[in-house]
Length: 126
Ligand code: HEM
Image 1: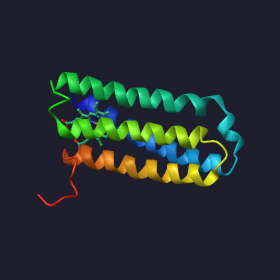
Image 2: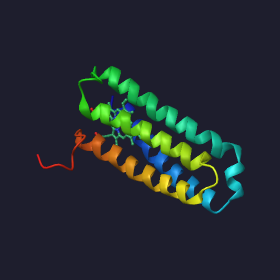
Image 3: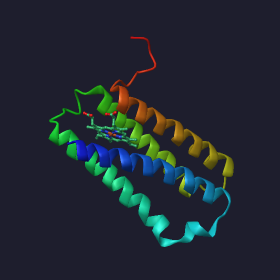
């Protein structure tokens, strides 16, 4: 289980670094964005991130519906994905895309905080 968690955390780090990096490449109209590996790598990383997540949920025999921090992570992950779609294909408004990019980074930070504290409302006093 520890190795799964390590891969999961490594993929989480790669996922957000890649996301931040791609935002910069997009904003600077970098030709690097056209390279094949830069389009494929995020899918490989995110599939591993989710794959290890599912493997841990199954392996640890966690019940998703009765584990609030898991529900919060899954919900926030969907929001992160949706914001990512706005950033990557968000049409002609650079402001909207930058706002979505920043919001996605905040949502990602929330996911990590929930992961570490195992508390979806970690910011509220206990
Ligand atoms: C962007 C998405 C995600 C990020 C950044 C992320 C991040 C992390 C981090 C940093 C940890 C280690 C926490 C610690 O023990 O200190 C962790 C553990 C874990 N994550 Fe995720 N995660 C993500 C998505 C998910 C999803 C969608 C699920 C479930 C469907 C999930 C399930 C788990 C489980 C089961 C653990 C192990 C908990 C334990 O130690 O018992 N993660 N995650």
